[in-house]
Length: 500
View 1 (cartoon, one colour):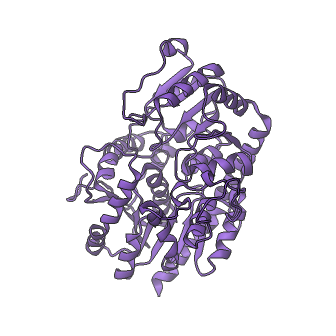
View 2: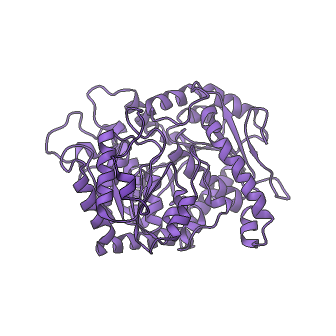
View 3: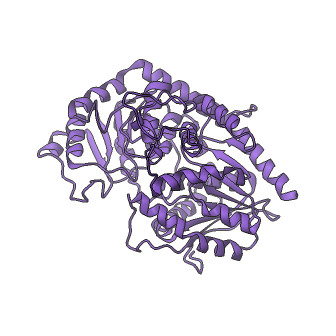
């Protein structure tokens, strides 16, 4: 039910004694940053007895409110179900969702204005500090996105331990660290490759994370992204959404570069069912509140397709396409002859125009091209009919595809996605990449050719399955060094800090 500040309370604890920790969790206000912290919050609440206060800005809170209310109805139905496994998974968690004011209009329905979002985050610092002062019981820690820098200021002022959470790859973390330490060249020499990023292949200028590419005069976004890496020593530790089998070299380098900072590798941060090798159930853990309503009808369509036959296409919550790119994608995907599940969210066109496909396209592809606004991606990738994933290569989507053993075809838009694509193709070997600019520029012929290779290449598929097995071992294994073990060590570390 709504709280006084418009927050949704997803209701109460079932613990006989007070929870061990009260964690205030603060994501950067984008879907791809909210999701992993929500999955982490559910794990901490269900397995480690945490009480969670999950803090969104007003506009993201409004966008998620409907999804959370819908979830509550599904959970009530699950609790009444004779399926005891489903009913047990729907047990209420001690997670309270609250919001703080922001200057984004109430009618906003998601945004691709990343600099605008970052400016809003900076301006929300005073409201966040007021919220912290008023919270009861007093928070025992703050777990916040590295890019929510004001949370460190509030933590320092109020004497609350802050845990920095990194939503992207370890290699991308090291790229930001290199930028913060001035290790990237101030000017670019044509043809020169950058080889100082741990756990990444030699990189071209355009492979670097977009906001930290070298500038003669750093702009607002460069400073916003780099400054938090000059203050990591103020955080009590860093949680990394990755795993050793995939990024061991980068993770080891980061720990050597920051000897005074504790780093816990706890990824892939996904619901436990994602590592079962089976279709996902409809439990609360397997549903993620989103900015757009998930269309579950696509799962029935997938049920009608042959195993491994479907190419799943989705470019995330922020990426934009030009009208020309949309048409090249459509014609290239049509030419493959594969069944295709294609997510085209509202507002995906760069100019904000009305989305239209080429004349006759829908008639020609009827029955084998299923187009929806937004998909329950975790369920889709776990479906046996899906053979491969055509993605923008954001880190969440990359990990979700890796955890299901799907080969990846990356078409990067911004931020970390170029680096992820380079690693997918040239380091991990579990997929291919398209170029947005320069050589290999997007055409229908390239879309068709690379999609066909992705769906048929045995080496790509074999490597993808090996990475999947590494992800499963990191989460399901109790051996020292696994992600599950690191999460347990993190909880024990917090407990020791709270006793001092």
